[in-house]
Image (cartoon, rainbow, N blue to C red; front, side):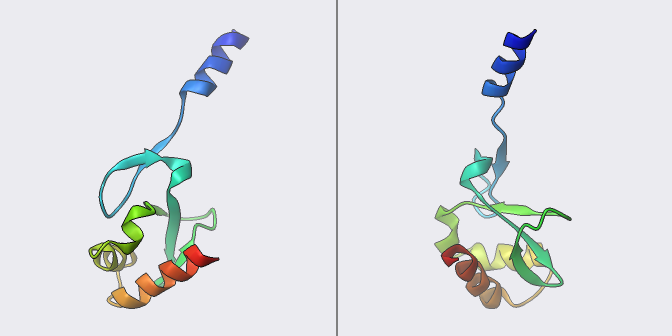
Length: 88
């Protein structure tokens, strides 16, 4: 029984989808974000979140996807905030 539990832990690696390119990646390799009152933040552990891969940070469609996810119109502001979060 213990051997099976250890094997299951090694096999289970969560994958998540990037909201821009819609490709699946290992959860650890993605940036997990959330919108709090129209502002982009790193995931705080409470509420809904979404993932962006590091490749898509510079993608031309990213601002539109961020504004759709945050239900706000300031796409350039959200993109600038994303870049601030990555630099931290």
